[in-house]
Image 1 (cartoon, rainbow, N blue to C red):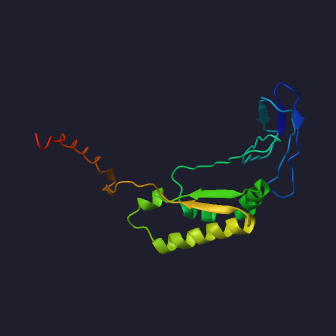
Image 2: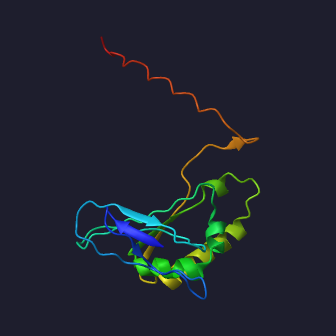
Image 3: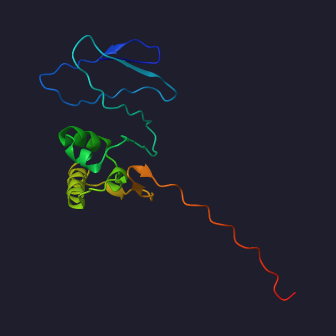
Length: 168
């Protein structure tokens, strides 16, 4: 893999290994606006899981990831030998996990199975980031569906009657 910062020279990073495994590359550059460009090397497969750009000064770092249509069961099945060390390297103080919207719309939902999947996910989080607080958010309020179609919005309530002038 090659990278360059702004219009600087390309730097090559050797990625060949006997076994595929996640690695981390840190690049230190002066503070300010920059452009990081990555390009694939000559051969082989290369997966880039993400890029974190941070400053040396204190502050809040937000790492976010959302995948449309996923359920907590998908997260439970991920290869935690890959994602766990990456999460641990980020050393979060707080992990926020929000799932449930897709589950809530499933008429055949097995709550026992979902509870077991949450146990797996929360167990992995505890294993890899034991000092982090974990906030679990559920789905937002939403209307029920019938035959796969959303119900129409409820009617707007009528305005209150005008105040009467009693005693006139």
